[in-house]
Image 1 (spheres, rainbow, N blue to C red):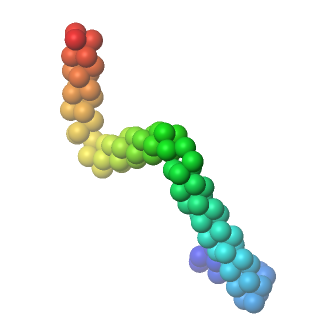
Image 2: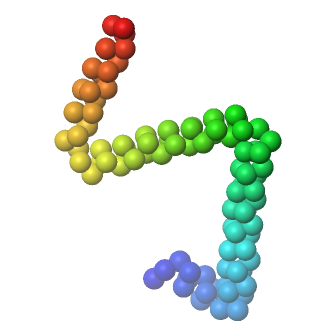
Image 3: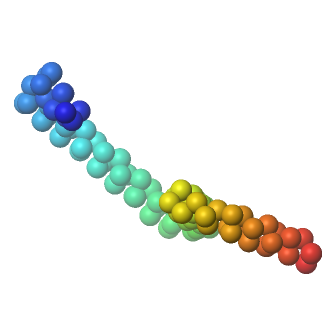
Length: 93
């Protein structure tokens, strides 16, 4: 049994539908507000916007690597080894 069904049975379909619509509308408004702020920041302060974008992409890269490591554990050793070698080469330079 899904959570939505439980709420429907507890509070009734009419009230559930109204509350769900209200929550969805609030979620859409929050999303639009975040997008608007990001676009506004890009116009007013492009350097900071670019920095935030780079941070977001770096987080995405780390997350993607973590997910791949979970799916393919044999890659962890190879990746760690290559990262150690890269760090060692950077120290030598």
